[in-house]
Image (cartoon, rainbow, N blue to C red; front, side, top):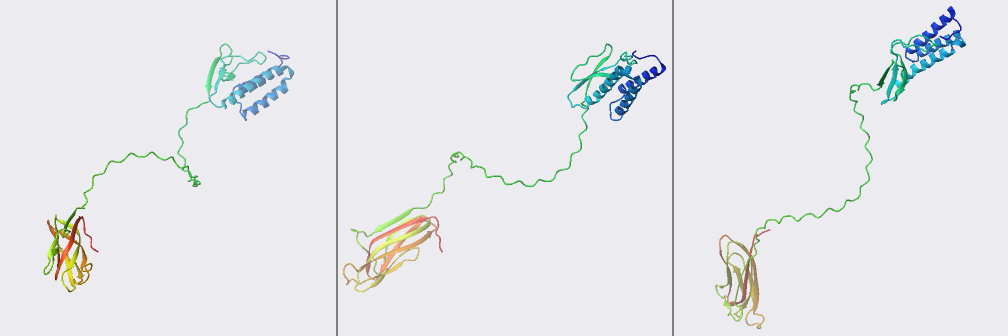
Length: 297
């Protein structure tokens, strides 16, 4: 044991120095205890003098070693910490004397392996604690303001031509049948229509709706002007004036035309009947067209 003598004052100083060391290794280096320890170390230094400087330096080193433990504990994971744990009766250096408290840590190392004294235990730990319970769901935040309208994107590429659709069902056949008859064309003789008249053209048709078209050239065989009428057996006809036969050869014939419609509920004949006082019909032509529907105003 280093010292200037074995006086009672010297022994008291040793006790005070060892007590300061014990306080360091048995307490955490925090803002409260650390301040008290340093005050006690300064007090011990004033009393012991130069002879105790070496021992005091060892105590201060141990104090900062204890402080490094708590500093290391604040390091972020995943660091692994290692240290030596003093065994029972592990002694201080000779210049200090005394015994380390069982379990005192020294040579704290971060992510490394410290060198421990024979008989002391190597221990390791880390700072990661158990996962805390999930906190409550926070309140829903306020709805953000509507963002500005984005720019119009470029026109997309033209899509591929679709496949041809299936052929539709064939529609119902439209009605476009034409029935016609002609009479008294040269060299056939003219048809006399004097008195009660005569049928000059006729066609047989099935039931249905029909558009009737008729034309003929009528001749007046009398010296007086007279009227002549042609009409279908299904409706109204047309009346024209025939000039007298005493007029030049080109004027005593008149053309007549009839346009009419008819609806037959059963098959039958559509016939044109012409009459005059004394005359004849030439070049009679009848055309009857079957239609789907007749529309009146």
